Image 1 (cartoon, one colour):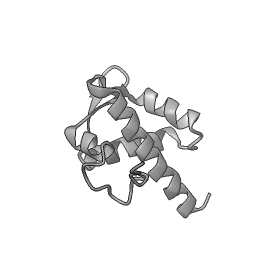
Image 2 (cartoon, rainbow, N blue to C red):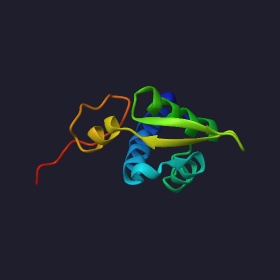
Image 3 (cartoon, rainbow, N blue to C red):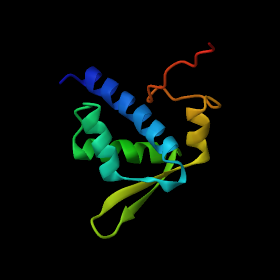
Image 4 (cartoon, one colour):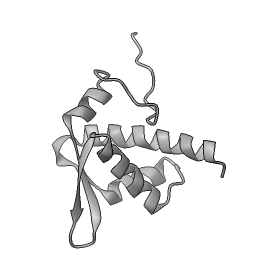
Length: 104
């Protein structure tokens, strides 16, 4: 798979993960939830790719991530910065495929 196409998939996955975290509110989500989303959306991401995208969102400040000690999987919860991003109250980095805001 070419690099440009893979980057497009990762950008789309990041936005989808942001929406999922936003909708899960303060409950947060396990790594397996993100894997299920990636599978259902046919993003063709490996387990390590999913983990990488979660960690990337953490680096940008959109979520906090904890490691679940039992199985070493990740657990993410959203931050207020993510809420601002999803609600179109903040600029979106090019590395996330947020659509343009529509004023209907």
